[in-house]
Amino acid sequence: ACVAAAMSSSSWDPTNTQHVKEARELDVWPLDDANVVLLNEVHPREYVKSTDEPHELYDLIAVGAGAGGLVSSKQTARRGGKSAMISEHLAGGDCLNVGCVPSKALIRSARAIAEVRRASQLGVTGIPDGGISVDFSAVMKRMRLLRAKISPADGHDGTSGVGTHVYQGRGRFTGPNTIEVNGQTLQFRKAVIATGGRPALPDVPGLKEAPYTTNEILFNLESLPPRMVILGAGVIALEMAQTFATFGSKVTVIQRSDRLFASKGGDREAAELLQNVLEEDGVTFLTGTTKSVETLRERGDEADSPEHPLMKVTVTAGSDVDVECECLLVATGRLPNVEDLGLEQAGVDFEVGKGVLVDDLARSVSNPDVFAVGDVVAGVPRLTHMSGEMAKQVVQNALFNDNWTLSSFVVPAVMYTEPEYATVGLASEDAATKSGVKVDVYRGGLEHNDRAILESANRGFAKIICKEGTDEIVGATIVADRAGEIINEITLAMKHGIGLRGIGRNIHSYPTTGECVMGAGIQFINSRWERLD
Image (cartoon, rainbow, N blue to C red; front, side):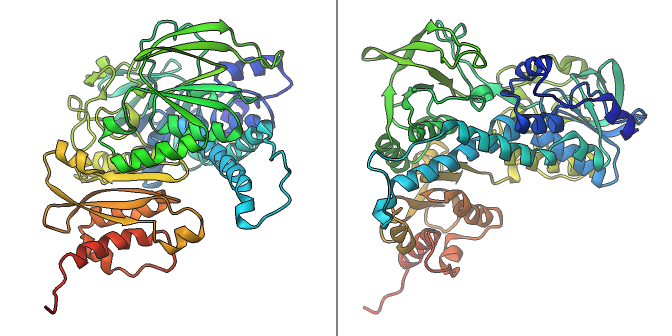
């Protein structure tokens, strides 16, 4: 059956103009060797299904092929179940194709560029007087090569290889226990909605008509835009602001709030520090409301013309301010993909703009045979690792009658700027106050952290938030190099009921930046010392 399926698909050909056109329709370009490898894995041409012998009844069908769909369908097969995965667009979802993977590749290049520019401070000589040059084309080529290298983990062959049946097409529910794909009806015991989300577009006059960019096409750029305006000041916005400023773009971030992370209840000191760092790296922040977008020049076909589009963004910030740019990156949040899935026919309740409504077991509140995971779910963190963990939860609950609850999850989040910004739980005193929780805050700064000093990176801190008068940890914020690695210690402690005293008594290797966490713990311990007075 697998051989027959392989014969029904064909490889992408970068010399075929029709293939190039089809790849662009999938929002993938240029169709170079790396992207050919990617597409052959995650969206083979003319691929319909991996089997000519579908099961009469599937134990689990996943609609969607991002982290949630991949993990749930593959884990079901590995545990002896009959599973299928329906992939319409690009397997691997946002994370592999237009999110975590390509963005971190660009961030790595930017970090290398910043290090070279600072190299003279470390005793490295030989840097040209005019400074170094950045080959943006080479940066993007490296990203595409590494993305292609990772892609087999999410590709159709890898998924079908563990026993999951893969269908490529639009999946729609036709009843409480049936799904149609490519004209074929599949029956299931349980199903998982894992269709992810998409960028939200704010209601700004002229924006819909403008040649704007989102994360879905940003990583197709072949030449560096001289000027970039970013609508929004969340994770994607700030990561790309710092990265493209480092590459050499003149970057302006338009934010609605007076300080970063205000809408999320983020730590005030972290917000101020990170904005200062990004401004030092060349990013301009403009606080106000985006009034309009005017297209001054349309986007050309990059195959024929290297010319970028040109837009004028008008921002009301006391008075009107006009900012021109060749790249307008819209990063103002995300919307769940709930439309045109047949959810009404399946009896699955959802809210447009919010997502599928689920209970604490990640099960639809209205159809007990349908579950949902990841960005399509209302009210959960929109993070790849959240999608993956929910997928494991669903397999356990749906097929093995477990009671693994969403409310038991402790979910960290990381912004991969330099320095990184990592949070978990109630990440600030402000957030705790909004939740009605009285807290104490313990701070371990990097000012006197020896490893951070030696790395010339001692701006930052770890703040651990505890219930007032106790060492019970309810959240944390860390700003530091590799904060995303350090936050996992706090997450583990919260998950398993280890208090701040225990962290303070845990011996940390010296010298490490992670000692800042121990420093917060020691601050708690020292505040309760007995004294020989």
